[in-house]
Length: 81
Image: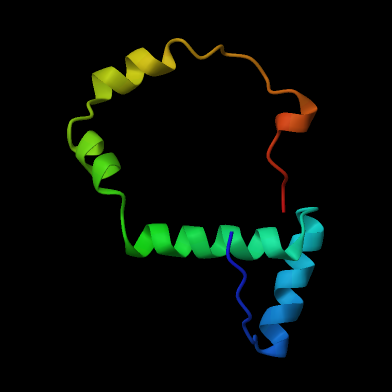
């Protein structure tokens, strides 16, 4: 890994610290996730885009038919806001 130093506006820094605390993760991890998400949006993965062009609703339905229709465990539920 490489280390970088960035300066953030105080408001952005405070919001990032709040979110990291809510998500129970280190601030550095939150920052990496945010940067990766932004880069992914700006520079789509060509291999993934190619696979998506070949996707079909039938293939999706076949894939989803193997997923059990059960309620998730508590630890695996999405948190409500």
